[in-house]
Image (tube, rainbow, N blue to C red; front, side):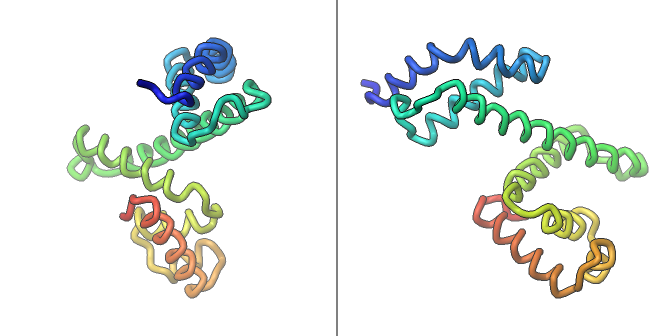
Length: 168
């Protein structure tokens, strides 16, 4: 038997799903992505164990969640495109297979998600180290910071990955 909160969420979903789907679709201009994003928004509410009766402004609440999800979707897509551009520059003999490519993009997405709360400069230092194989000295030169600061940034990023369960 469903819990009272789950039943309330079912009613909340039926009351607001159509509106949220149209709201997201206006921004994404893609019905399939809008459906995925709307479903993800309701999954986040379910995972957070929020009692739908406590949400005073449901559409504003849903809109905020959707806006964050859309931003994350665009950020992940930009990251994926940048990575694919780098891979395209590799000689054909070194290029990954389609299966390897799918796994690499999935891993990159997981790492990006793990680093989402960190400042941009920390992310860049981490990616220079992990993706480009740069030394701390080279990273420091590129970012205009000391090697010691690069070390601190790497510690921050690695801790964040470890806590998120996506250690490289």
